[in-house]
Image (tube, rainbow, N blue to C red):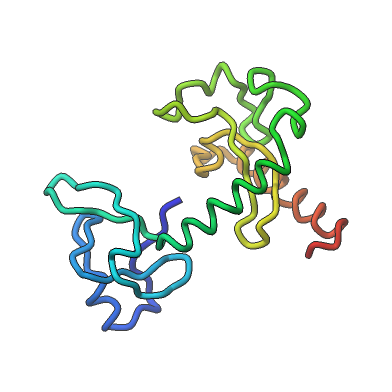
Length: 166
């Protein structure tokens, strides 16, 4: 998920460095939303160009992005989908929105998997597999779906306590 570039804790000097228009960074430096360091723009991954032709960058630095990628790879290897779910993606149902493969296929806009590995960013622990839409927190203000999401997170926390990881 993309974080916000500006926050109230930024100093005036940082705000000056971080000025942006329509998501385009106009300075030679940027503040990483993960590690809070102000770094040269070369330390960030380019996202391409905006409608005005200005180069845009991701909001996390390359070092933080690489660290997160390695964590996700490790957790996927330790928790293969079919072993965790006990079935194929076509038979699985998202534990949050209760939608299956047929209903979800093609909703990501790319050739992404319908179900993605979900993990806790705070503890770097595996939570389970959920659909891409729920992973991006698209609940469409459905109270029942949000309650299932809360129960899903509470269950993960309970498992961490049971395994003495919290």
